[in-house]
Length: 221
Ligand code: SF4
Image (cartoon, rainbow, N blue to C red; front, side, top):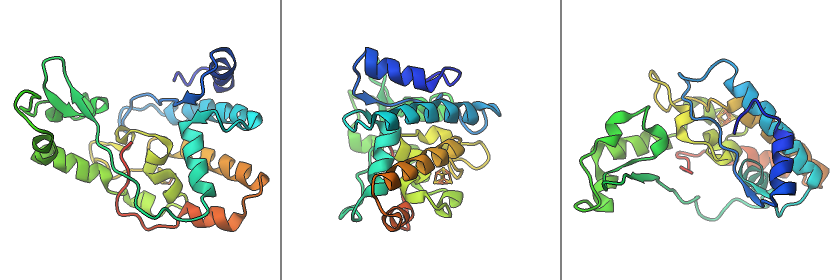
């Protein structure tokens, strides 16, 4: 998404003109180091504008990943019986070379030179590759600041709102950071809480769902 545009208008265009029912607004590919001081604020303005239109429609057949998924977790009547599934992303180049999620190509270039190719390597070779396994372990750990957050179970360090782990990365602290878009996530979750309360969900349910589990790992979208 281009955060300099008006999120309300973009949402209306997709839903009214194009009749789109499933939307994921992708934030720009920045690490904590590469983002400008205005990146997060502009994204928050865009998304909160789109969220107001989504709430105004109150049409839950329109699935917006950043809104629908956290709203479901806020309103859940019970904790899930099993932990959420974990996913890993893989990039396969035209020549068959295998690497991690393409979002991280410029941030972690060694993980795009693994000497693995679909002709001669298995999925297990990829998952057990020392550098890949280390990346997955680090990116799945809950950042220390997020483990203290009152919205940790809904936000999940950003993954609960469809964020790439790229947005947590910095050269010094690696993946042990809150999301670059933390303030945006908090603002969206607060607005979704208000929406849920106005539709009869009790505060006790919302409060329990916000921070109910002491998670040791987070889902990779
Ligand atoms: S990214 Fe921000 S809102 Fe999300 S869990 Fe971490 S501290 Fe909380």
